[in-house]
Amino acid sequence: MFKEWITEIVVFVMIAAIIDLLIPVSSMQKYIRLVIGMILILIFLKPVFFLFNTDVEQVLIRGTKDWLEAEETNAGEKTAELQKKEIVRAQGAYISEQMAVQLKEQADPLLKQHHQAEIQDIQIGFQKGEQLTAEHISGVTVTLQEPREEGTVKQIDEVVIGRIPKQKDRTHDEAAIRTTLQKAWGLDPGQLTILWEGGTS
Image (cartoon, rainbow, N blue to C red; front, side, top):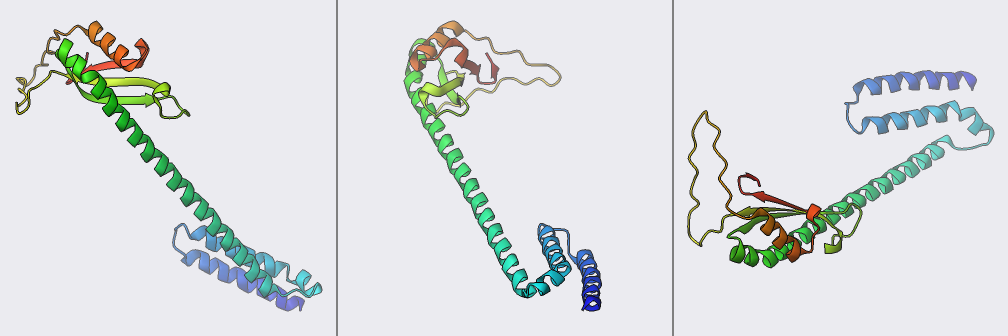
């Protein structure tokens, strides 16, 4: 009995070493090593199981089954968590986009009428950990441009190689535009960043 037990350990260790050399490096490698380790532990404990008249094969099958079920449960929970995060991210992007559309509809007519400018793009930031609502906006970055008539083509600025082009002079009253946007959107001065098409204001 003792001799057979030692022989089993030696043979299994040799087989395990060969399997470890043959298996490719992948995510399954750690699972294969874990199963091999479990089998080796059971072989070491075989005399104890023999004393208590326990079937080692059944213990191994039951233990492997429980472990695989636990792994499947963990994998399912991770997948569900990733899907939940993706849904939350998509909802956040949609809400932000809709709010940007509303802000543009509120301010664009005022800018065109009083300041000869229009909104090209709006980016909204929200307070971390808070709901994506108007009350929890942390900042708004708005990009403005010169108003263009429908069907007109934007004039391309002259490009001279080797020379840094001059920034186009802004005739707009930056302070007045900022005041208009802050009142229209109910923002504090530090919450609003104004950019112009082609660079910062």
